Image (cartoon, rainbow, N blue to C red):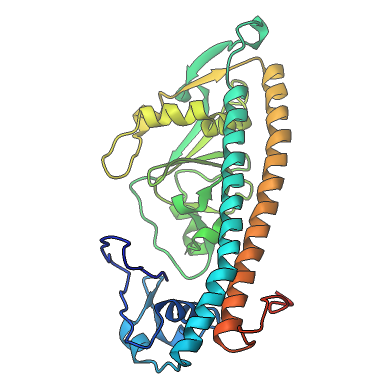
Length: 336
């Protein structure tokens, strides 16, 4: 929900958006805060319907719902109070976003350094550079096939589930039936340590299989390295590095969504160093990335608490849990 103020310029209301013009006597800011509070308290659930697993607002039912509002002066007083209190939280959230961006840049610089040559030391130079196909023991490609999905069963890993270097099943919960698992996975079963790469929408997301009891969907390729040539961890971090991502982008095609074909992916050059040096570099990467992830986790926690605090403040103000004319905004979210 957002308010379009006068002077903001022209705007287009696209799909999945509804434009509401409040009647005279209704402060649009108060209206937006009221909708936010209603959603937070679950009061809009009766107007929400499921379509192919996606929640949609039944606008007809929503706009038929009766709403009660205080007088215009009280609406303006509440909106002014919330504007003043929430702007500070918005600024804090912006700072957290800046810190998160700096951490991402720090991690990218760390990985770029790990996969760079040091010309001053011959032992730190790449021993050889091999195309991806030369370091593989197994290549499992499930593109071009669509499994029949069920309400429960074996978790299905789609391109949506691979992000930030790991498999996040909460991002999209889809399943295939247990009795059809082996039939569907006939091209090969995943193992712990296998590297997964998304080939389209989005391209270049990488993860390592930790729990092999999963099924693989379209736009994902499983890479199982030959440990005598390259460790899976080296491949994992290289594909996440700026150099690895650049090689993928260089070979990608497509106008709306970039994707990479299997034959072009097989040719991606993988730089290799002596195993002892590889372990030394990977050890440094692990240590520093762990610190970055710890900081990122703490910032994400603070961001979540800030969002809860802001929502609780909005709900308390528009539902009359306290008088904004005398409230400082403190202690209204105890227990949040």
